[in-house]
Amino acid sequence: MISPTNNDNSVRPLDCVVIGGGPAGLTAAFELAKANRRSLVLEAGDDVGGISRTCQHEGYRFDLGGHRFFTKVPYVQQLWIEILGDEFLSRPRLSRIHYKSKMFDYPLKPMNAIFGLGIFESIRIGASYTKAMVFPNRNETNFEEWVTNRFGKRLYEIFFKTYTEKVWGMSCTELSAEWAGQRIKDLDLRAAVINALIGGRSNKAGGQITSLIERFQYPRYGPGQLWNCCADKLRESGNDVRLNSEVTSIHHDGERVQSVTTAGNTKQHFSADQFLTSMPIRELVAILDPPPPTEVLEAAANLRYRDFLIVALVVDRPELFPDNWIYIHSPDVHVGRVQNFKNWSPDMVPDQSKTALGLEYFVQEGDELWSTTDEDLIEMARKECDMLNLAPSEAVEDGSVIRVKKAYPVYDDNYKEALGIIRTWLENLQNLQLIGRNGQHRYNNQDHSMMTGVLAARNILGENNDVWSVNVELDYHEESQDSKQTDLECGPSVDNNRGRGLPSS
Ligand SMILES: Cc1cc2nc3c(=O)[nH]c(=O)nc-3n(C[C@H](O)[C@H](O)[C@H](O)COP(=O)(O)OP(=O)(O)OC[C@H]3O[C@@H](n4cnc5c(N)ncnc54)[C@H](O)[C@@H]3O)c2cc1C
Image (tube, rainbow, N blue to C red; front, top):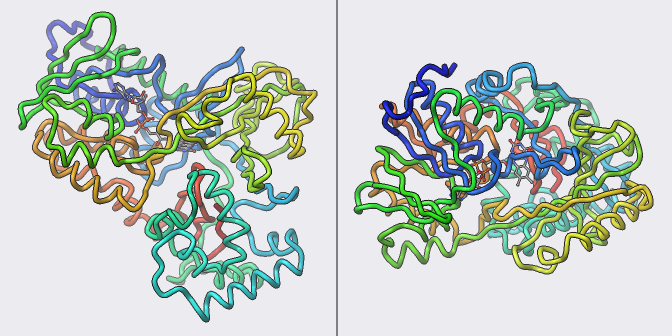
């Protein structure tokens, strides 16, 4: 528990400057505050929470993509409760896939898929699966080959290809097989079908597979409530969280970071003993002063990201569909996923006679959709809802658009090598630690991002943790204990209870 004991900052030197007021940065500062170390969190935006913030439009709240709270790390769970207490709701989960005007369970279940697709399509799936088993591609290098080898070409085309390409904006042949392996883990179609047919529930190790995660936690007013509450607690305990404070230079002597500079009318410099950064690595490297060697600059410039925008619609209907979110696999519309925020928490909607939807579009900064006016995006979202039969266009009353840069770090063929070069050089700066999602260019959820912040903070307090082990080793160690959960956000995801369901993308 952090205590608001010493608010006299003049007598407390600054221990740490934290770049970024998202989950990673705020958690790090919170952990330091618990040990009575003083931090300054510098946040470029006008609100805390980063990609996990909650936006508002006329009292309607919406996340930048629905943010489910689930963790297998007990300390993260403890922190959530410590920060937000009983404002956490336990919510039922329903999410389905919309494909060819039909709804399929998500995570996919074999019998549901077979009945939904029809007998002819199911035979095609079976035949293409058999073919993949008999004649696998021996040299699988890309996502398409990896998935086809395990599920057959037809299932890949139906439930992976379109959605994955919508999300990543590139062909599945350009995405690495390694990435597929990380996201889809070792799911086995044959085991899944057998399980579905005979109701088996055992995993490969012979243990019992836990049931689907059918409930999840969610703050009453969205994840932004948690992060605002965290920032308030930090300020109450004598720390500083500054908004609209973009770090534009990081000054160092080759061995230590000495200070950072923020943009604004009057540039401000902040010095501290320790520095943590959750800003995107590509930008971090570009603002180092003096600049690192050309090789490092080039490696950073090669890191790629996927951007995102969400169109929030207010619909004059008390109810539309029971799902929290729906994956849209149809290539006929641009939308990738539709959130129903009222089903996340009724308090997200101020007027219970209305519903608030969030249509998620996966884009590239500057591309056609990104550059479309808000007005036209709202009109497009309204039409797409109608086409998909999710909400009648005449019932859409209002809308709002939020664009999110660098929502996803891209795992392409180059990123690993580039990251290696950057990390090796940054290790020279002994008092700088990289935390969080874009801060480590890693596909972290909130809990992983938070854990990097916790470990980095504890390093400052004298421990010797490998901050880069989060979302690698933690997952690995806990894999056998419980169902894994990698489907928190979009992207190719599976029913993570091994051998129990089919994948979706
Ligand atoms: C569509 C979508 C759905 C998701 N769903 C889930 C989910 O269901 N559950 C879940 O747990 N996670 C989910 N996530 C992941 C979650 O959003 C992230 O893991 C988390 O927000 C990462 O926290 P972070 O602090 O590392 O980074 P961020 O949230 O990106 O925060 C970094 C902060 O740094 C600030 N910053 C950047 N540059 C500077 C600078 N130069 N100076 C100062 N500040 C700077 C940014 O403004 C930002 O506020 C989802 C993500 C997306 C995109």
